Amino acid sequence: MESVMSDLPEDKDVHVILNNDCTHKRNDEGLQKYGGRVQFHFTPTSASRLNQIETRFGILSRKTLKDASFASAQELKDAIEALL
Image (cartoon, rainbow, N blue to C red; front, side):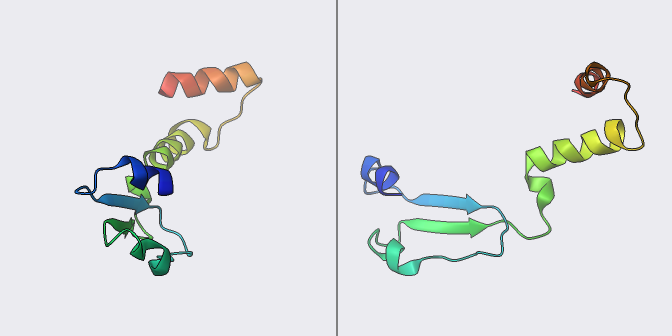
């Protein structure tokens, strides 16, 4: 955080978006030195759709991998690439 804040003009704020996690801790003491310029935003625990990687893996699982059988690693690779 130090390097981000030191490179940022003092009239700019930092908004940090954090993935839903059970460790939602703000560290208010550490953030006080930035005078309220740093704000944390947490994604809701049921918002995996906001994470594009999770979305893509969900589609891959449902359309390519579920109940599938592949004779070789190359066949699996081809099936994955066909989806992309």
